[in-house]
Image 1 (cartoon, rainbow, N blue to C red):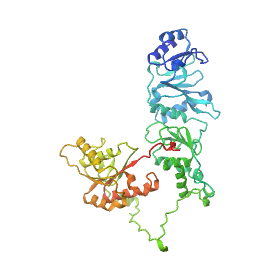
Image 2 (cartoon, rainbow, N blue to C red):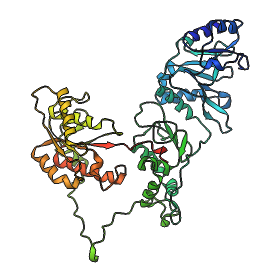
Image 3 (spheres, helix red, strand yellow):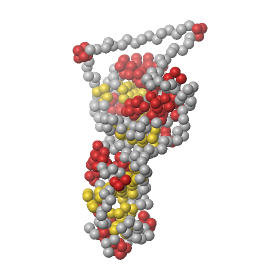
Image 4 (cartoon, rainbow, N blue to C red):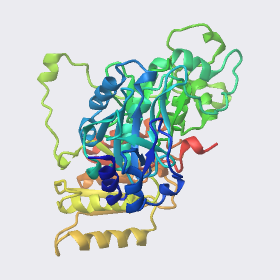
Length: 508
């Protein structure tokens, strides 16, 4: 198409164009066209003589790949990385044009606002990858020197905000200039050194395992690029691309986007909800920053817990050791008569296993758990998964008794046929201040007497009054107790966890 035909085509789709000189200078006062379309007459006057055409960015957005400030292989490496991170099909939808300097433009529509952003710079602070969004424009084919490689101006693809941000995150991964670290207070000083600083030195090797434990997914064998929890494509951060630093691009985690984090900062955000003072205390308890460790590089093992002193100076009696199963050879393991347990929820949950339902406040976790209880108690599907009918015990630690009953009644009326037996037991313990050791004897007696197949504990933190819900050691002890109950009662244990409120990175 000619520039005039292109301008009229874009105008028909709600996109403004302006005329530009060969050096990209606008040939009209173009600010008004950021929010208004040029008239048909203006388009004909501007482009009648073949002036270059530029697209006013806004809903139409552009990723500008400027190869003159990078090595010649930048474009190919960008395409390869997009493909490797699951975004190949997205690239195939984009309009792509080559620029006179040998660079490229990727173009799309998106309703989510986008500014002009520098995504990747070389060490000399020259821009290699940037966006054209609101407040900007970019020259377009058929202007001289611009070659349309893929797509049509009259049929630009529409990306969701998530798709657009996935594309930009991959572009950010090419940044060669070290970004800033967030303004985080230093850890409290130890006698000779600081726990955080020593963790940075010797605990860095633990960062990939720490990320995996919190749901992050590595995207390459070197653990360089990572995808945040809950995503199935794209890249969200990198580890050790900048030596010994976790570099975050996503805006959807507790980390601040466009910042780099030292190893102990990663530990603080993931293990301590962004409480850096608590992280320093935890690391100190693990042996980091101890005076005797300064200058060493061997792994530090936390000291074993010691028994509290007994009044009168007597030593505490040793704790009885549980009866443990033997260690098995391969042949002995093959000879074991282990039977695959019944599935309480087909494809999801076995008897004797545990499952967590987690979410933020007011996310309807108790509704989901009550629906699960009714589904298993009646053998009806739950969230599309088939269930095996079993006796269910629901330990309600949070709702007033009448409120729980009303919710349960409404769910039964909505999904269970009349006269269907509902094999559901409920223990209402709101306001009793109980812990699992306090209720365990009664709980186990009921589970064994009535052959409970699934036990629901809602919510977890009410049973963890002697520890913190987001402290790994405290939660680990509670989960061990849950597993013992599951094994001894031969019941699936389902528990409810509240995510911390707010964004940890913003709590300062």
